[in-house]
Structure formats: structure tokens, C-alpha cells
Amino acid sequence: MEDCLFCKMVKGEIPCNKLYEDEDMIIIKDINPQPKIHYLMIPKEHYKDVTELTDERAIKLGKMLKKTVEVCNEKLDLKDGFRLVNNKGAFGCQSVKHLHVHILGGEQLEDRMG
Image 1 (cartoon, rainbow, N blue to C red):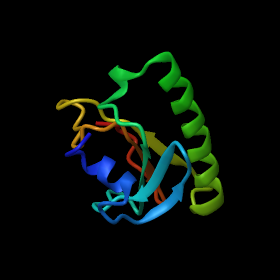
Image 2 (cartoon, rainbow, N blue to C red):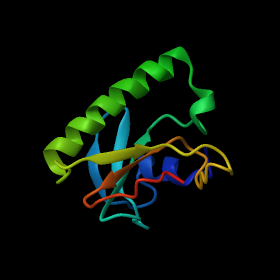
Image 3 (cartoon, rainbow, N blue to C red):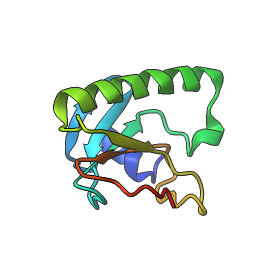
Image 4 (cartoon, rainbow, N blue to C red):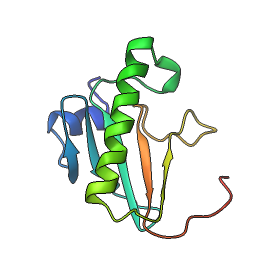
């Protein structure tokens, strides 16, 4: 999508702090971190949110999540745990209309989700 912030990052048009990249996704450091460790896993294929998952996209997303966990274990200090979060729509506080997963950790997170 032409005006999508994350698509521009994937294409290299906007600089970002990449932790990992492969043919399906990038993992970048969030520019406005909430906890001590805050990264974003961003699929390279543009779709706005989880409601646009097809069977094929769901399989690919599952592989991306598996790789994200591997990257968390290998490159981030998340041995005590982490949280993966996906926001959808206005009530879910989705700020960029391109599916992405927040990787949160590095400190004790709140028990409450909302």
C-alpha cells in the first residue's frame, strides 16, 4: 500500500531499527516503547488486520510467530517471559493499519490486559 508506514519500512523507504528480517517479515524496535523491551513483528505482505487472514496468510503468520519466538529466545533477554499483542481497530488501539504483533518484555508486565 502506497501510504502505509510499515510498507515503507519494509521497502527501505523509511529507516527503522531492524532486529531481524527474512522473506516474510521484519522485526523492528518500537520508536515509542511501552515496557523496557518493545519490538514489532511486521509481515511484509500488507493486510490491515487479523480479519483479513486467509488460510494461506494464517499458515504464514503461524510460521512468522514461531520464528519471532526463536528470535526472542536468541537475541533478546526475555528468559523470564514476554507478551505478544496484536491490536485490531479503533477500540483495540490499532494505530497503523497494517497487521503487526507487539513483542513486550524485559520487566514485570501488568497483570491486567486493559
